[in-house]
Length: 614
Ligand code: ADP
Image (cartoon, rainbow, N blue to C red):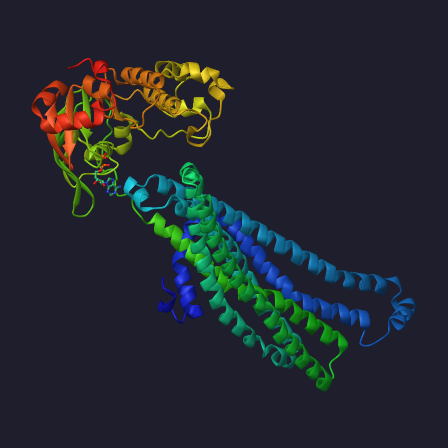
């Protein structure tokens, strides 16, 4: 939102704008309504007790000072007349002040405690719902979003919304009620005095409104900048290899410094405007006190009454200060809650149809019928793709970069749905199947292996969470990973660093193959690594993949010669279209395009004698 579009925003508009996200927050509070009700009850009681303090002070004062009598006179009277009875009454009366204050403190604590409890629970639920929602988003959403920004939404926005929610929830009843009760009590004690002094109260709202606006603006900028900083952090740590490789540490440091500097100014603006409100209110209050003194001088008021009224005025200060914070809290809450609800409102672009069925037994027959798909309008990534793969067959996709090979795999996994044509699994349209059951039957071994910062054991077990230890080890054996795993300091329990960076590239790939073996899905999608490994690693990966591919329908984006040689069929792609299809030798014989591609991509790295073909 541009700041020019909202030159003036009244408190009423703010409250109205706040209501929408607040209304949506209510369901998060609903399960905890009992604790919420307790908090409210304590807040209301607090306001009541708070208002009673000047009355108690007056009552106590009147008893202790007995209309101007000295203490000595009182004691004499006590001895002479009522004796110990009066003394104990005086002690009881004196105890009224600490009793009231202690009750007030307990109520205030309980109010804050319950409010905090409710809001922390609500925050935790909201954060969980947001995370669930984000994880269920389709891939196009993540293509558009920055990971750092999403992290900031889940961490910062939920936090902001929560803390604002706590403050507003605890202040919105407690503070105005305390002011109303406080004023009512003052008026009851002496309405003329109260009118004289409280005439300045509305003036206190002027700095609140003026600086509240500045705070809102700076608060919004601070929230935006928090997102930017989060993106810089996430990208700096995730891309540290590239950053170091290009020697761009200084550049990243500069980026961070710029964001940090902007955050410094935003925070300073918030504090500057926030902190000036209090002294201004205090100055106006001081004026009120001098007016009060003038009134006392002219009105011949007793000292006890004056002290009680002064205590009442003093007790108004805190709730007024709290009310002055509400607009800022409201703004923070609106911004953060709006950010959260905007994310929650984005429906995943790929959704199961209401009538979607589970895919249970899969033979592994795959068919593309005239499939077209574009990531962006008017630019087809794949166009009119048709092919059919019999179960258990091996297909290889070859073609220059950008030809559409990865898109085919993504469509099969339903990361995206085609705009034209159909994809069939054993004759069933993938759109009629649940995404989860479909993906349960597919293993994806990708060139960018992703390993979690966890033990080797857990990384393999990710393929099938109910696998036993022996099954995990068996999968590692089959993937030629068992021996190098045992050589690690804690064997299977060795924790591997982010993206598995304590292992070599070849070892990481073998772990991801073990994961796929454990999953044991009937369909295997293989996106082969383009980077060359040392020949021993390469050989082991080949053998591991060979085992993995056995008895499975396999589609491989081929970068290795052995893959195309072992494929039953090769699909040659160019500019998003299939230009040739057939077995290797046939294509080599008949297709100019394939021959060129073969010489360029596969042949150039391999010595002729290793090919075993002429
Ligand atoms: P290949 O795997 O053969 O290298 P891709 O399937 O990745 O080719 O890409 C096919 C086309 O789609 C290319 O023109 C590429 O630029 C485009 N493309 C791929 N991914 C995206 C994306 N996430 N957003 C927009 N365009 C994309």
